[in-house]
Length: 362
Image (cartoon, rainbow, N blue to C red; front, side, top):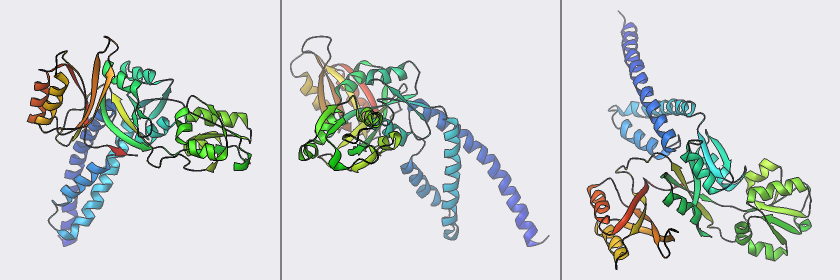
């Protein structure tokens, strides 16, 4: 037998073993896809991919082969993600707004393989997940310019869903008009009140009259339907593309740091992981002196850092409040278990809304 024939026999044996291992890997991919669909987690996870490539490529002892093995790993991951996408086909993501709204854009960026389903308000999108019409909902929890989205915080407190991820999206406002219109033609701008406020300096500088709309995408659609060269909308470039408007001026919002934080709400709670270094918690305190101070102390005493603490009326009793807390630390640790247990001594209700590794900029 020649060396070539021996090499081919060895390759045949290895390929046979690899085929068996490939099937086992794809069986695991099925479980991953099912988990991601249930918990509202996107297919793409670049941080984990890079971690696995670094860890697994280090197992290759022959340095000459290592770069080839990295290519092999990346190819295998692409096959796995393709299968996940097929298995997750039909996933439905609820959002509040209309096609072209910022929430719609964010949903399509986070879940490019899912169907984004519009609802008339936050409560309707939230309920669509509770009743099983959608797999998850993408709702805003905070805007850097306008603050908390209180209606969503209330839904989180009174509802049954959990947060499985938090994403930060930069909001860029643009002046949009029908084809053929020029900046000097514009007399009136239409948009959501928040967008008009964000662009107040630009509007005042040009002396535009303003008209409010339900949201920016509705404004864009309205201007497209009107077809008037003297009326413009303030909104996103994605909405302009959907409704056939042109950009007259870009990035006209006053603040260059205008971002919205979106949370993914799912029926199933992600199991806390040691990698999770952020958490969201809701609680009410006992009606005794110093209960809130004790709750804050308990969180700090166990090594957890509070990044935000916000109060909202429960609407059940006058002057009764619940607290929305965002913190840093691993709730799956022993300290996390002890902290949650001790909170029961000063809190009448504690709900861990979710934990996650980090916020992702989209």
